Image (cartoon, rainbow, N blue to C red; front, side, top):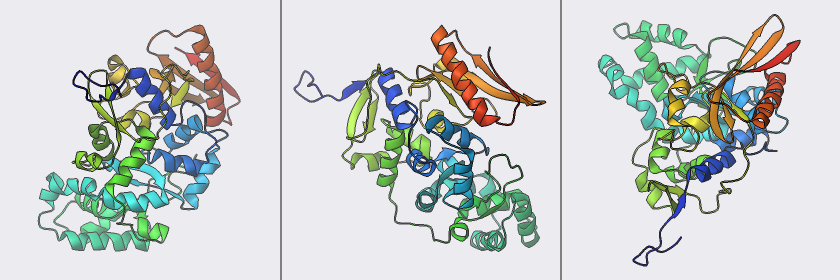
Length: 373
């Protein structure tokens, strides 16, 4: 930390590539990790999981030797769960993190009751509806449609969807298998985290520990990044008392980080990687283009107007295109839509890594092909 003109110590500047490499390292994307699937889920501290399959692809891209059954088994064994957490969206987390994070994030989930939904439920006893909803899902797992119909019988003056929103906000509803199991379809059914895991929510967790866990998986970061990721506010007050190390970006934005966290050299090579839809690497920062991964010109092609975050390819650590697997009649084709030309060696790496991913995504396909568009 060099002194400024007044003799004061100035924070170290982290350029775009330094931020990029730090993020890749924390996200297990600079090399495949020997961690187990459970260890990786704990480290990543929440994998966005609106759809069932992206966490499988996310772990395959990060771990050495990962198999579908590793994650499916963890879901069946109740060691990982899927529920609404950060930003009120569905995340895959370790069971113990579910129990600690859900009380911390209660204000994020409660916001729905302070908006139009809450106004439409003005005549409903919130505590009674919460208790009724909990009792129903703990009797047997229910889809939201089933839960809504049962709640509407007691509160016919309210819309079923609004009653479900109330219960979702107030009760930690986990999606039970077979939802989330690779290759198994069906609508999500829910029960309470307490009933599913056989343990109460743990209200002892504090925001400082949440900040540390976030930085270990996503740092260096700004306070706004932390707030974007979690959905919480006023985290600046938490950060200031934690003794974190400070940095600045090239344009003077302050970053904080764990003092001991890895920050690789900006010139460390980054391998080609295929990121799943909704990958948390692209979703967990306030300024998603500045933050290290993607040129602003490509944002509209990755983040759609209807809330879909498309599956992307990383070349030299940055988003350079989209990918999708098309399967029909025993043939699986990985189509890679590149945003710009890449070098011959990078094309070869995309094809090689793509064939490996087809082996994972479509093992039953008799014919597999990678097409770079």
